[in-house]
Amino acid sequence: MTDTTNPIIKVIDLVPGERRELPSIAAQDLTREVFWNDYVCRHRPLIIKEGAAHWPAVGKWQDPGYLESLPSDAKAWLSRTFNPLQIMVIKKVVQIKKVQDCVREMREAPADQTYSMTGIPVPKEWQQDLGEHAFISPDRFEKAPRTYNRQRMFIYRNAASDWHYHETDETLTTQLSGSKRFSMFRLTPENWEDCNSILEANLHHLSCAKQLFPPRLSLVKYEATLNPGDVAYIPPFWWHGVDPEDSVVGVTLANCFRTPWERFGDWRDPITRGMTSNKPKPGYRASPIQKSVIAFTSLMRRLKGTPWYEEV
Picture 1: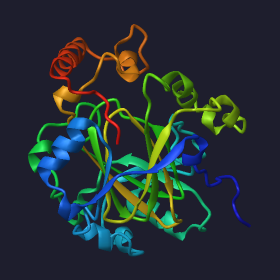
Picture 2 (picture 1 turned 30 degrees about the vertical axis):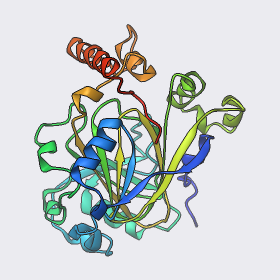
Picture 3 (picture 1 turned 90 degrees about the horizontal axis):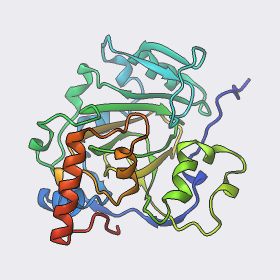
């Protein structure tokens, strides 16, 4: 009998908006200077096609049995749910197991079952199959990210990642196994009030969610499919949701590096104002030093005429 207690949940289409293609560029056509100056320093998302196609993991990790055969004592939380915005640990839903046992259970399960391991460290035995990205200098990773771990891995089957954003740190999401549908949008002062509270409260999952969003919502969603070897650049402040495109065991690697100081925040941006308010969102409070940096960089951009937000 098929287990119906863990339904496959898709999250991208829960948020309405105009769909446009997420910009992409072939890895061999992307220089380090262009990536840094035109995308990182301008907070513009990008898909880098075959940005990790040369990594051994892209070929090996898709083979059934390979990851299960690597000896490792690393353990992880194995969840029978998608990756929600607000993670809830429930005894009957989450188990702690060796990573290779988690992968084995996922692989042997029926094709309609949902599993996820979110944000786990890469087992040291797996590191040998990873590589570097030619379009970014290794020097960018020398200093630890301000909020997130330098590396974290997501292993899943049929598990979506709910809509969320990163308040700081740049993210390179590398797809190593399986394919994902990626969707991203940026909230501006014009549409912040219409969307933010709905997303933060997970109201987009309600059956009546379409009635909660304004009928003429001004929101552009940039979308693309991420295949093995492809890389997605996710700037801070960009909401993103991810749905699997297939039912295989998928593996995604997130590499994080520090946000350039000149792109640390802007007083006019609603997310920045939330970080610096007297009642900030839990976990998003800016320190006095961060507030000073935000004030300084906001002033410098205004004097130079450099926009904080640019169209994709």
